[in-house]
Length: 297
Ligand SMILES: C[S@@+](CC[C@H](N)C(=O)[O-])C[C@H]1O[C@@H](n2cnc3c(N)ncnc32)[C@H](O)[C@@H]1O
Image (cartoon, rainbow, N blue to C red; front, side, top):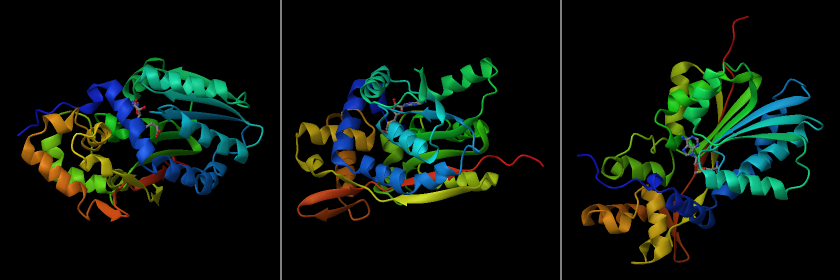
């Protein structure tokens, strides 16, 4: 039976609030930063073919913190380059936050920011309507494929924009994470949207392999402290529960048996570990770096 629960992403303000709290309670950005500073530099070094100008596309950039860190690593690997950076982000608030962040950072003169307040799908439509032929050296989609209707089509489109030696970076929750366990068990009872909320790197890898596309995979360990979710009536705990289930006001609107089942699974060893009285949810991420399509010789 289809769920009658309301989807969190339909309330942008609560979604953004819950995402902010999730970032505070998890090592999400820390684990991405470790990846960006330790592993990504070698990937970035391999792009561009010695060109003095690089095209970058960020899809679902949010407030841009992660994007700017990647751009600074890119510059370290390619000193003296100029960068054209397309930012694709549908949330006006996030785009505003990104612009504020850029205005406060010195030394970004080498980057030209093109602000696209739109979804990945709208960007694709625009791109095709304008018959754009520009290619990109580095494209990234970090924690955003959950919000498109057809992740495979989205990957195909952006993959087709890669230059020779370009790279497409996708970061999503790992197939080994607590998220996958939760979604495997409860997706049909939680979801009623056309979105692909429940996609993991395991799905993306299977898709790429079926197409014979080459890629590298990195597992990024991460945790999220969900202890507050178990304090009945705790506002922050309820906000985190909304983020975990992707359901708006989950605590107040979910049927009692569903709520009890979800709460039990969340603290089950399949999803979480308990340490020093805290419940730490397995938020492991996966980073997939995709090579360009091989063109005929
Ligand atoms: C979980 S946040 C990730 C933000 C950022 N990449 C990070 O990791 O901090 C997902 C972002 O994708 C954006 N988004 C939602 N639907 C989208 C779509 N259809 N196309 C592009 N971006 C989308 C949201 O507004 C949000 O900023």
